[in-house]
Length: 138
Image (tube, rainbow, N blue to C red):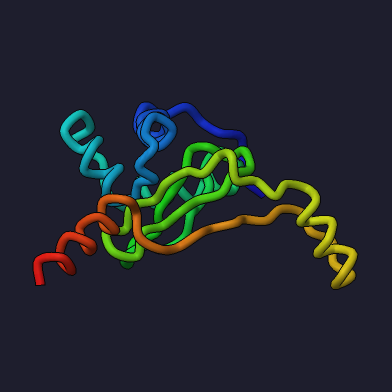
C-alpha cells in the first residue's frame, strides 16, 4: 500500500511541468526542462514520479508516440489526435462521446466500463500542408 504523498521540490516541479504544458511531454522532455534548475535530478526520478502521479490520477498516459510514452496533465475526459508524421499530440476537448459510449459498450458486451479513451491518428495540419506542397512540386 502506498504511503501518503511526501512533499518534494522535484516532485512538485515534475507535476507542474506536465500540468503547465499542452505538448503532452515525454519523461525525457520533462527531464530536459527541469535539469537546469535541479542539477541533481535523474531521469529515473522523473519516471518514478510519473508512475506515482498516474497511480494517483494526477496525470494520464496518452500512449507511446514515436517510441516515447507521452503524458497529459489534463485528466478530465477528452479525446486526442496523434500525428503519424511528426508525433504531435493535440487535445480535442469538444470531441467527447462521454458516458453514452461507455454505456453502449457495457450493454452490448456485458462489461462494466469505468473509463474510455478516444484517439484519432493521421496528419496534423502542418504535415498535411507539407505533403500537399511536396506533391505539387513533383
